[in-house]
Image (tube, rainbow, N blue to C red; front, side, top):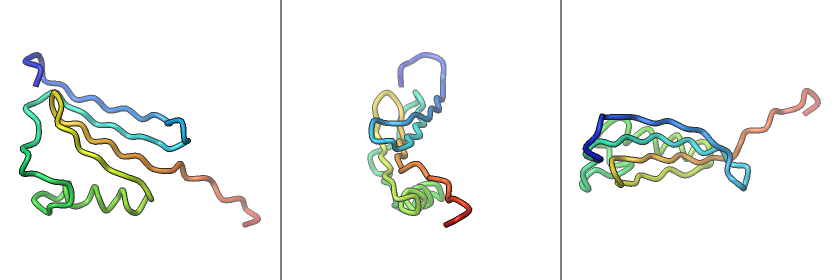
Length: 83
């Protein structure tokens, strides 16, 4: 971590491709290298990759100054009443 006050940040942006990007980060000690997305070690590590797949998106885990999860997926378009 950064040695300062513990913190969590959440942001949602739209990238240059029009995808929604949901970012959750903390400045803690970080996830151990032995923990991997989809590993089944925790419910979250099991469910997040499934959610990303269902949304047609991607999920990444970075360990830099804490832990950073990034979920990127195409913006869902509203269906017209005529469809």
